[in-house]
Image 1 (cartoon, helix red, strand yellow):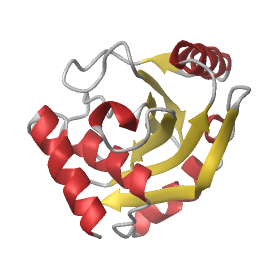
Image 2 (spheres, helix red, strand yellow):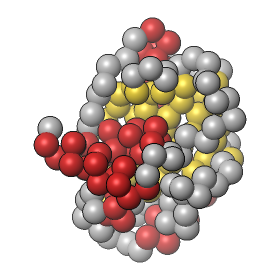
Image 3 (cartoon, helix red, strand yellow):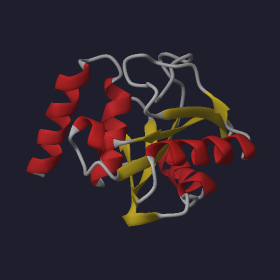
Image 4 (cartoon, one colour):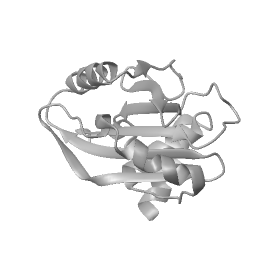
Length: 169
């Protein structure tokens, strides 16, 4: 619990309040937080969990533990994530997921400069009748994990968004 709180404070301190929902879901994905889901969110979680991009990994990568998942209270935001350790280069990881995501019908999402840079990838697609996002990032960049670890998180809204054009990664 202390690790989760400290990690959350570090993340917020690093990027400020913009992109907080994205960072909260990514941190929850990294540490296995489950804030509890109900209704539409509960029905959407297994759909997200079944997405192939969570199971795909480049040669030299191994899954670390099981998947993490949860919902952000109050905004219908559902996420599922998987952590990996890799032995190859970061560029190899990004190239692999770029190819896999594109072949699976995901499209590059518009960049959100507060959280997306040349060290992460963000895609958008349709899942469960709504918009979903796939985010590949390296938690070691924020001091949250070893430098040879990365995370794949898929997220979606379980209902109407107060900001329908928002990018969730």
